Image 1 (cartoon, rainbow over the protein chains, first blue to last red):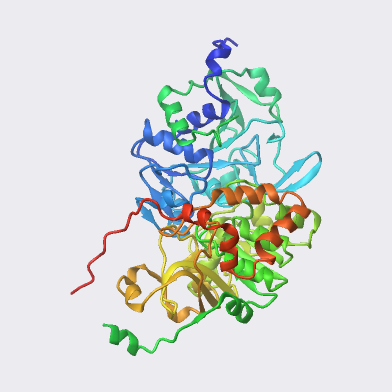
Image 2: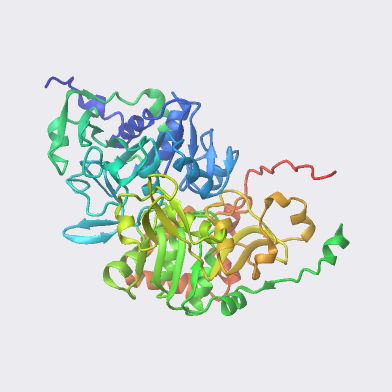
Length: 263
Length: 314
């Protein structure tokens, strides 16, 4: 495999989480309806809005819909800056109804664990063989069940990218191609990408994830050894485009103290 | 107009927090709290439940932020029906974990929902039907393990759907920006499941930052999202939602959530936290004193942005 090499200085101009956010922002197309979620996706949405997707509208499960980025860093979706000048402040059912209608183009999710079919666990984790109770679904199961495209963001770690999730809190492709339809999930729905601190995975015809691109500053061996299953690699594997100056400027404007973008 | 409103004979439902909790939320109740997600979490009410030593409560809510964690840690709770229990900005809620993983201070049963299934469960009760149909959770382990979610064949087409059983809490405790003494309430900002949650519940306790004249509420009936005739009790409790925000009144005290996270990692530290902020703080006024005037002042609205009044004349 011939990949362009990246010097240390090139990659160290941005953190891995910044590379992940920039890649996530590019999953949003102009004019789309986006289920935003929390933390890193909040920043990715703002990056998209202020760069290539000014016409995107963000929806939040608390009932907020807005077509301008919030004026300040949000710690949660219900912080007062997210209500100011919103397109609409409604209730949960009013936004979830749009999701169930199939109108939401892309939904972002975090994950405790994600597996090779894009199934997500946010309910029971394990650490050193001990079961850890995680907070639960929140809106994740709804977003994963009902958005046209689901994008999962998480740190790339063997313990978190696993062969098979311990609890399928939010469905990806289940056990492979066709599984979603047999369960009754909407035809136009399902996982589109897993974006980590090392690369971007997409899904093949068989419903399994493969490595589509690696972020600058990492290499395939590192990605494979940090993944808990034998990850397939695309024949045309590419390097994720570096975050642009403009993208980095937005990320750092929103998170100047690197609360969520340190590593 | 004043006379007209007075002629309705609406009785005042104003009581103290202590009275409202004592009278309407006995041990064993199913209680909806935190209906607006991270917005307007009724912390003062939760703290009073802890001080009055309630046991065996079932907590209902979409996501709770740290209020559920505090009540679980204080031993008030035997069951949680929620989509998410944690600390919204910091992640883990340690008391919840200790209870579920180690039965400390007691075992807590979890009935795990998604946000949409909680919303639909309350909506079903709010519109008076036994269930609501949905596609969400199909194929998931939430569906397999939650008895209130049942797969069924659609009677009108060939689809399979999930029936979400109606959920009727004994009492909804809802923080609102302002209401009149009869409980007609104005809410704004994100609403979460507050409207359906209130209507679904047998009793409603409103916790209001401000109690205003009936004329103020009547001036904008589209903003009256909970009608007073459904409300059981009204508690006037300024700063009742701190550290969560109340749009137009005060912002989120982010440091408080982080401090709670840092100070409740182990059981001893949690008990110290609980004594300092709840058990040894008899009233919300005393809580505010402990919080400090300058910390509260710093959370008040800095950049005012009032909405433009609408014309209701004819």
